[in-house]
Length: 421
Image (cartoon, rainbow, N blue to C red):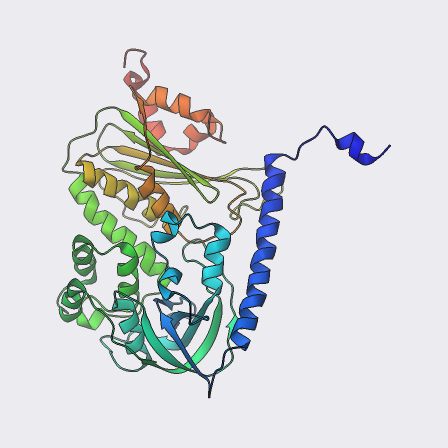
């Protein structure tokens, strides 16, 4: 009797399917890396010159205050460079993990080491990098490379992976950058601090993705304080500063009425957003399943992290959830500004093993932002909402309650759990 007959009645579990999928996608990325290497080797580089269109920049954080600062451009100069820049478009195009990694691996980071205290330098390599960062569209550039590009595939949960790197001797802009008037204003006003400049640009309609780049290359703020800011730090700093500005406005609004809950899912992450009547509080709880990128545990133990702030906001860095906290909070605050209400907010992020490679906190920001485009669930009170939604969570309700500051506070109010509430 064949083994197939013994196993005929069994279907692979969802977890097995996800693991198989992750392996297949991982091999697809490895094949893409090989193809990209061949693509670069076939380029007609003359005297180490390389031409491409740069959509973005990158500033590293190792060896701070001397950092690796670079210009990002597609290896394939025939590609549409705008597709390679991290933005909300990636979410709206429903890019999957393998798509995102292919974009990032297809970039060349032409970089050199620089001290962060560059002040208001607009010449040389830093000047070109700044021109790229402040431009509203990708910029055509000619690079003089010092060596052959090598792969540096090091993704993390804040920034997406970057593919190939090469030391650069110099860079020259071939066309003219297009700079928006609000950006010109912040560039010329060196009496406006970075916090004020960030708030100004956001109010003028620039999304945080554009502001991240400008802030990172030290192109805003008080003249003697303008410096390079590592990309990973700049993303969280901008999310935080914009969030604090919105928080002040939100706290002047009246409370929402009933309890509403939104749900959204994207690339192996599921988000539950609870809006609860009351004065402003915010909490992010992350539930990381075994096999997911941030919990490779083989013991099937779920990893939980959380951070919370009360009515007055945060005064310390959210260590447990890091940049995810500020990205999720921004999405919530933007929604509350749009409806002119305040509330307590609990965001639960469930990370499954389908999230097999990190792509950056932009997907958290966009998933929470777009959760509010979905149809919400409405409840008369939080007790009912939590009990109904908890049946869809991977974490037992008692465990969730023991981890949550907001739930502990609401539990202490007996009236909230009254059948007549």
